[in-house]
Image (cartoon, rainbow over all chains, first blue to last red; front, top):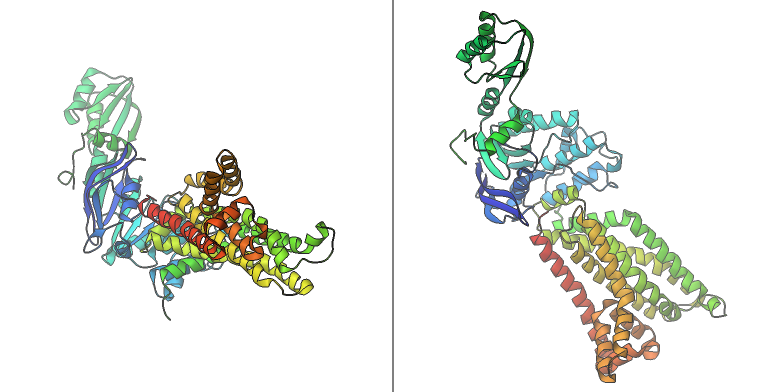
Length: 307
Length: 279
């Protein structure tokens, strides 16, 4: 449905995306995850026909057409990260304009305004809208044609609670209807909740593609427990290393890396060795650290290399 | 109900937006006020009283048109055609070619500015018709046509300047538009006359002729004066131009060709640049 084929984009000397190859299949919900500047938005905007590839190609629809062709965009809807509308127009006039452009039926205007919880504010000028309402109006415009492909750039970043409810409901309904959704995010929560598959971009390169479960496991592996003891001895460290070989001492603390499952066993070893715990903190795996590891080549790929 | 083509949808939307724009409304008020003032006070300034006739008002308005219309067309054009990033992204992600969107917007802007000028010319025209009769109204309409030609030319230039300039590029496009206006309206004639003064008579004459055709402001000014008063209002450059084109018909054809080129070429370049731009 969306096919990136060795897609590369350069802005001057800067390489924004480097030889990205990935397929988003029909009916899939895929998240493009990565830190700021990783090339997520550039990749998404290229699928929306807004950016021209420097090399490679991006095909959308069935059969795949180059995204820059207007006919290819018939299959797509795109919601930018921050959307702007003429402030003098009402929400309804904005929707009506895009409805006329897309050739959607007249009833769709009321349907999408209702979907975006704007049916009470549809006749007010956009200049009276809050930021969240403007973004909801953007969402209404994006869902207007009920396109087979929906492209969303950081959709949850600017949405208010009402918009988030509408957005989560929308993605679930699209999944149920076998429609394709590709969205960018730098928040794992969105990806965990919505995506069938998560593609991680780091420095413009595809660092790996994961299912939600695979990514959660990876992050769990990267958690740690920090134990402060009344007195830390070499015997205690050796005992903990029986269940967690990478346990280390940092200052007065014993640090036990790994999943949550290893932590009770480590604590049992400490107590068996006579240790008295005076403090304990835990830290779950952080996405930014995983990104760094992936870019350093430590992460590998969960589903067999670059997809 | 028949579906409106995307080109017409975009043009209609742009007409509505441009008509509601404060800049267009200010232009309509200023242009209307000044046109009315010129029509009403022309005789007073020259020691007489009452309202000038259509022909005299048209001559008096030529300068106002060549100063104000290019400036307004450039500014309104750049502000509408170099939108903020979030607006441009949504618009250009629709299944419509960028060329269609650009030309639809240009048509909408043109119609909105034409309506604003209609208010100015209409206010002056009503006052003249009421006070001095309808004689010479055709010449007045010729100036209005010249004004519309200048609007089309400078909207096309604005499209060229602003093609692909979203977000931060907008301020730069506005600065370039102001520089283009200053160059075309103020600097060009001074530079052409200064250069001609250093040349021999034949070369100077050719330079002045070229200057009439190369600069759309001069072309429209020459065309308007030719239509309103014949050759009596002509200066050195226009007379040289008339000699070369062998009479008024040739001059009118050359001026028309110049204006058409000044609309078509920048509009084509703008469409080409926009098609290739990353939004």
